[in-house]
Length: 105
Image 1 (cartoon, one colour):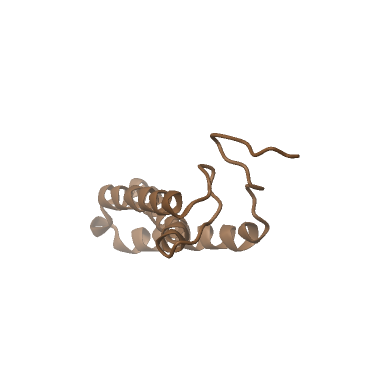
Image 2 (tube, one colour; image 1 turned 30 degrees about the vertical axis):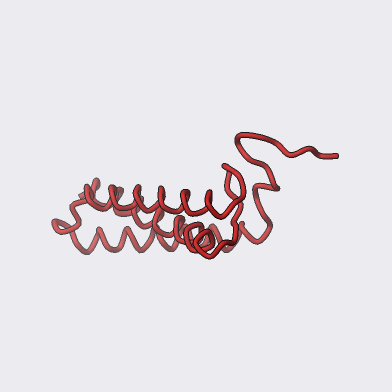
């Protein structure tokens, strides 16, 4: 059951984390990522988060423990939503990326 709860929590977290990136990227807008700012990067980041969520959900075996599994997924979704609500309005990446830094002239 612990595996179900942990993997369902991961699935809920990643589906909630991938949604804003994928939706904004799909509409041609950007959301800050550590990999750069472009609509294409946002779509890819969102898609990767969806894939991680799907794989986690697949191996969570929620059918064996449905109540703890669905509850853990809901908690993961709520957690990432609260994190985004608190942090993203201030652009936490401050226009930095992992692969290159912009000049601070």
